[in-house]
Length: 172
Length: 336
Image (cartoon, rainbow over all chains, first blue to last red; front, top):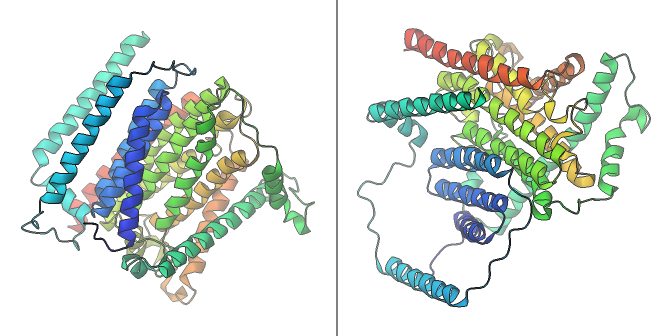
């Protein structure tokens, strides 16, 4: 059941999983919004680490750049002006908490059982590891998916100009 | 070094990686110590002063004494600060600064990690330091620190965009994001290095890099004539030292990155000088960039915040995009 060889990859997987899970749990349990954003950023970085283990370096660093960098900073900027006091403690809801815990455990049990039971067939054509996948992504974007790519950039430009117009109206 | 990374992790390998990390850390700390000394001396000479000359021969131990002072100083944490984040912020600022050094190739053989998206790795990780700066400003629970943090973050975000777009031209010319192959592909003669074909990109990169480093003329985060001290007002002792260390490690990183991207890395300027080892050339170029940073600090005045934002968004960004366009046209007409 627990067959693994002790390689650097395994250690890295373990570290990143701990980072993702603890970040997610802390994100839910913290009471201050800024603390939540920091733990969310930890989750983003952990997910990026998982992408690296799956040989998707380009995706991993774009994840760090966009999510851990830009999105987190944007959120911190947004909530930085919030109150600095401690949030008031919620009163304990024992029954609710117990039921939630049972539900979560049951879901975990089902998922774990299903994952252990199913066998994963090897993909029909394993991706060639030697190919530079960054280049492959670029070629796919600018040949097969060029129309959606251009549409997305037009959409982003429209959103960008719209935001400027709205902000300008506010300033006047 | 690259081959070890693929093998099974044994205790021996783990120890080896750890030792190499420690060696790099010591090299960087040594660089920072003497960069500060060199900076003060150079600025002193440029301003008809002598600079530090009391501690040790020629003042060589001045930085060591300063660092010792910082380390043994009382560590204060304001009572109303957000304690956890206040402690976390300096470490969070320093870790990416040190981690980006992993992808810098020093010579053909001497490099730490050979990642095929090395440039992207650098850009992505250096963005995380910005979070640390805002967190440091926010968690101090001080309005001056908060204002300073917002200002630094706005500046760093604004100049990251032209910085990234200015190197797109280099990436297009060399067809790779791998810093090692980018350095490798630059020619044997110095006019074949990227800084001449990519002169617009090079100028934008240098300006944006100085701003990313928060150094004069863009040192608004710690503009002592208008702010108290920026985001680190409340920090003292070794936490403050960590923020300063981050700044100087980024000086190291940017100087090395400029060398690799634009100045041909370890290549000699003329093919007949090839007998000089590559590391010497790398160090020469690296040192001259560091000197250039100190030089402009000693000679340029500080610009205002509105001028800073205007320059970033209205001048550097369009010029950087124009450079990408011109490079694309050039490649379409002459290279294909």
